[in-house]
Image (cartoon, rainbow, N blue to C red; front, side):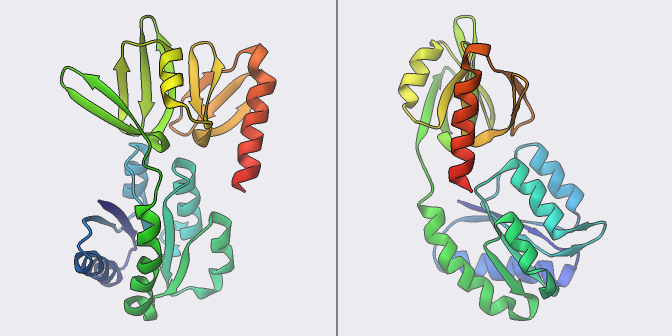
Amino acid sequence: MIRIAILDDSDTDRKLMEYVTKRYFAGRGVPCDVRAFSRWQTLFAELSEETYYDIFLLDMELPEKTGLQVAKEIRRHYLEPAIVYVTNYVQYAMEAFEVNAFRYIPKRLLREKLPAAYDVLLPEMEQLDQRSYIVEKESGIDRILYRNLFYIRKEGKYVVLFHRGGSSRERKTLKEIYGELNAEEFFYVDKSYVVNVQHVLSCRQGELEMRNGDVLPVSRPRHREVREKIMNYWKGYK
């Protein structure tokens, strides 16, 4: 399932993007969920609830905010989604690179250029990291993708995994789960916390700010090591 968010204050343009998008994915037999927004406030409310989208289609000029400001907020929550600008304001094309935009499409070329962008994006979406951790519980099974897992906390005889879907609790040791993950993006920052470096926003004064807004402690003995791991990841990402 490909999830796509459209943000444009023009009813006509928004509906056309939705039509072209649904037609494209239906023609290729790929399930998609398309949500169209006329106000950035509504989209931001969804982002704050950790609603995930694979692709964002944004206008550049919006009431009270620019598409660039909207994209920066999206990147604060998620690194992975593709951002595609569909706009009449071609003078902002260079600024779109600040947020690693995938495409900048003039609205007059929407019917031609948007499917072409999807032709490139679809294979990339299908190759996304699908590694996952499985939590078995009485009510069912939680499958948590590594890329959606923020951090893990020890709570007595249990551990709690905090992820984009909320949290999951399991009766295991933190050491056991860390070993099962066996992935370099996860590491200890304190004896009670393992974090996913992909979701660290800042590291200062013995604390980490995570993408979901939580602030975690970094133990003094681990501070230098944690800082180095985060810096190495950020340099590699850039």
